[in-house]
Image 1: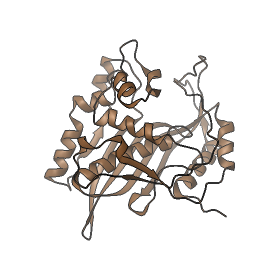
Image 2: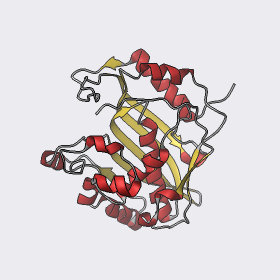
Image 3: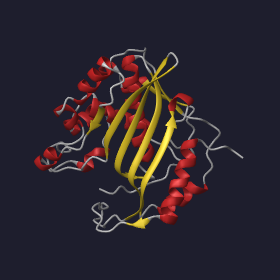
Image 4: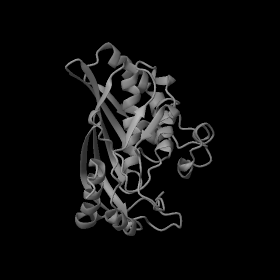
Length: 282
């Protein structure tokens, strides 16, 4: 019998929990493209811990995950510090955010990258970590009520990240905690997790540290009502005997803003095919 990775084990456990113990959403906001309300079954308070230093990465092999596009989104938010869809479309060739354009502004509203730029978040965190790596205030918060009042737009799902430094012997590790208010278990769970692992790796490389642990908390973890067939298919699948891992191929102490999406490489990733299709809730 093939031994599943930690990520695949957690994935199947969460799918079963949602299908068997989950409750139905009420007054759901999202809609499918046909205008029908996108109801979901959900659980609250899902938590996972991965030790990246031991090769535990939060990516499933039960279906292919578009990791290259996901990492490019991180660069759009935290390097470009932009909410401009033309940057995401033209520079990175990523278009899935277009469904969330606000009016005809060409943006997603005052969200994500706009908040990073407004508060100079990355500059401040890098400065804090340089001045005192063991400070306990390295927090990214994208939850900005003032910005929400100023413009429409999807409120951030992955809205808070915290970083901590830990020394073990002569090795310094950077740990990260991602907090997410809401997450589509089958579509976005591993995309969001691996995005923030990539961000963690970029900050660690900036200082020449190793990546340590990644903690992932989702408040509302759900499966939409048009995804139950795909959920059952994922439970039937057996993952290959591989242990995927993400590497960042740049020298230690490479400046955060000099790292490029193509510097990342996902190794030993052999996902089960065919890919499953999902209709997104907007």
